[in-house]
Image (cartoon, rainbow, N blue to C red; front, side):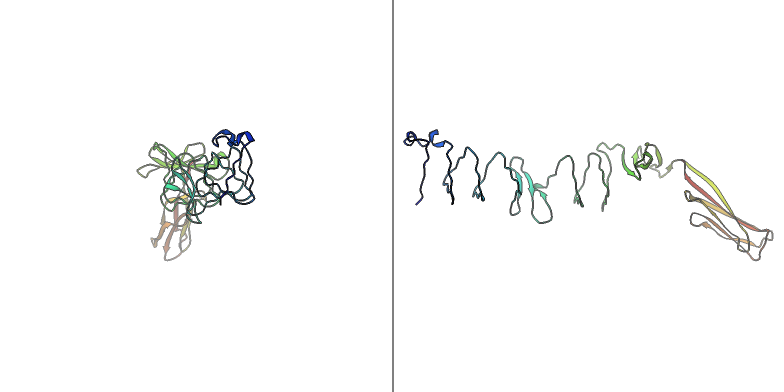
Amino acid sequence: TDLAFYFYNSANDKDSDPNTPAWINPLRLKANGDALFGGTATVAGGITAGGGITAGGNINAPSIFTSNWFRSTGNTGWYSETHGIGIVATDGNWIRNSGGLGFAGGQLYSSGNTYVGGALTVAGSASITNLRANGDLVVGTTDNTASYIQMKDDTSPNGVKYIHANSNLIGFLSGAGTWILSVNNDGKINGELNCRTVTAEGVGSTFVATASCASDEYIISGGGECTATNFDHAMHTNRPQGNGWVVDCIANKADAESSSRAYAICCKKAS
């Protein structure tokens, strides 16, 4: 048999209509066992539960505060009834947003790897320590104007360099924003080079001459010549070798008055 207990403030209220405010005064009900409500329990104050609260239906509240985890079971999570989006866990590997929609916020931080299965669009600047793209990496602006990738080797102004695309040119900018080297749509290189011709002589029976560029220079072109007094002399090698140019002249006999000469065109970017 179920027992119903009616609480009232005084003897004067016991014969009044149960729907009057006299029946809803803040009295206290304490149960050491289960408390069963067949209808709706309206509590004007708070509910303190030493154990758990189990509800077969919905719990509606303006806010819910917890000092421990907010836990859900099954392939569920948090869901916004108003906007129809949420965060859900369907396995032990990933947290997903329901509906395939995006996350919006001020910052996105990851202490490990960040995987993007589709396109990654960055509307502003992106500061990335390491970036690996197995597909295409597209850098540009929404209005298709100039774009750049900033790179640093130290904190000084000269340590900043840019890979830059602008005005049908692509190349490198200094930290001050001036072109270091650029290539136009025709593949022509724009930029000033300091070049010099390095010569080297070869003597003896083999007549091998090697003209070498300095470590901060690059071999652009070269050539050579052989000279002899008895015409018994021929050029056997005339080609680039390492960062230089080598010429090898062959003679049937040693001729002190014959020689080989190598020329190397060595260039570096103008400072």
